[in-house]
Length: 107
Image (cartoon, rainbow, N blue to C red):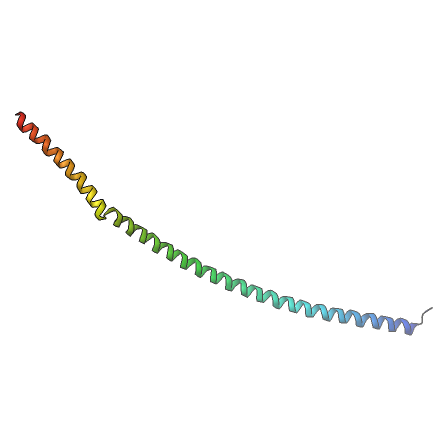
């Protein structure tokens, strides 16, 4: 049989162990809360960086689209294209002139 003093000592030892465990748990919770706050800050920073990149990329896309429009206009009005269009127009007008000459001869 254990004495009351031994039981009290055992309870004090258990109480000390529980208090120590509780202190460690509080320290760990505090460390984890700080880590959580740091992670949220990092996430917000990454979001901001991502939004900036998206904005930059959208601006670049708009610039490229504008440049494509300009290049398409240049291609449509390039000397080769103009020559081809002019040549086709000349053929049509020449054909029209020949047709008119034939009509006038027939009259």
